[in-house]
Image (cartoon, rainbow, N blue to C red):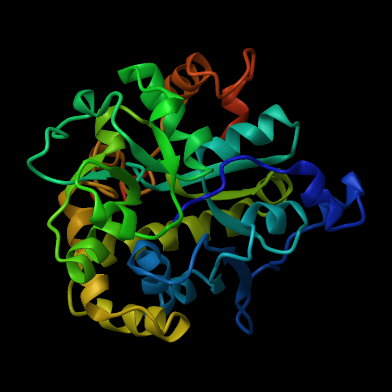
Length: 342
């Protein structure tokens, strides 16, 4: 479940015949009244799963409707690029991350991030137990299976912090067979995905290193949006954000009320199972993916100026971003940090 961190501005604008002005198409959503709900579309970054559960919870349990919204949660997949859909005006908001928000600023695109559901990026390095790969420091010079997106996101961070080199990289094909065949190989993964498959299908209890716990401060499962919608529909945006955060606060409690949301998840993604959903919620809670750090005092979806500045500084030092980007233009804190779920 990898995400593409680098924007392709030309490809995105190409959706509209290469017209930069066309990116500024007004988004949907009218003033709510007694007869209708405001329509808002939100594009996820992959097929429906527990990692998107709070949005589905807000749909299934009527939270969006309570705030006067008809929410269209659109499932992603391998053939979709949410950023292109956002830049092309085909969706109101997308699930994204800090990298893409900073790229908006770098490429002078009028889009930004307004909330981060995940306080910790769930990206992990998975290793076998008992072979001396028990810490990030011990992985220096060891072979690691890394995909293309990882090489431009978390890998530069690991190189800068732990002295990893590109010579360690082996191609990752989203197939766990090479990992299972060689105990000396580690691989990338998503906290709530590959470790489950390795245990369930491979019969191996893996050692899982969460890169966020090593200081990788990327915000993930964000809400990214156009500046035009923020400026012109601020009340609607606030209602959508508040409803989404309430949905996530409830979903992570993993109570019986999750059943309706999980039914919607399985409807959209028939390959999803109750066991996989339960595992994902369990490890997200154990590792503080949603509720940790700033979220413990500011609420679900929290972001801060300090963390954005620190992330940009670290990734600039790692060679990912150029100098002199005004990172404050990448985000807006006015819709969050209101104590939801605290």
